[in-house]
Length: 149
Image 1 (tube, rainbow, N blue to C red):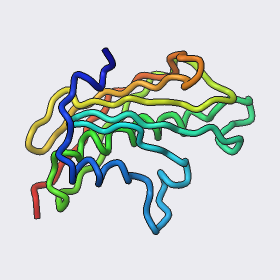
Image 2 (image 1 turned 180 degrees about the horizontal axis):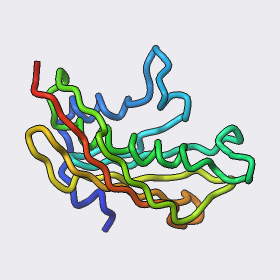
Image 3 (image 1 turned 90 degrees about the vertical axis):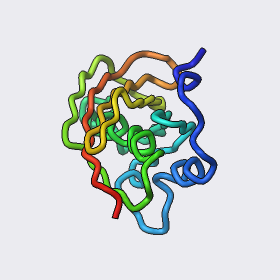
Image 4 (image 1 turned 30 degrees about the vertical axis):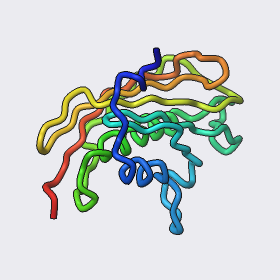
């Protein structure tokens, strides 16, 4: 059983909205990284960071900032899925433990909500090498949510 199986599907409209995350007419940071949503459910998301040589740092491995961005971004659809589209939310705390590195493969992250309050959402995420399955990083995050407008 995969972690995704523990989470209920999102309503169709919300699922369509969040599967398009990182794909817009305007270029935003997730577009620059090439992030791709692979699965989104209520309080859960799986996202891919495709390998690109531009993501390497001078040591020859994918930069930790790119991995940290994936760990944060994978939670955007998970946190935003059940929210009203007029609500804003943002990361207020991100703690990443880098455990491994990759050189020439995609990174795959899963993110899930551990507790949801009215204005604060607590989350976790993990990233692995998409081909090797090697654990790259673990993360604990907190998001702030504004009331609907």
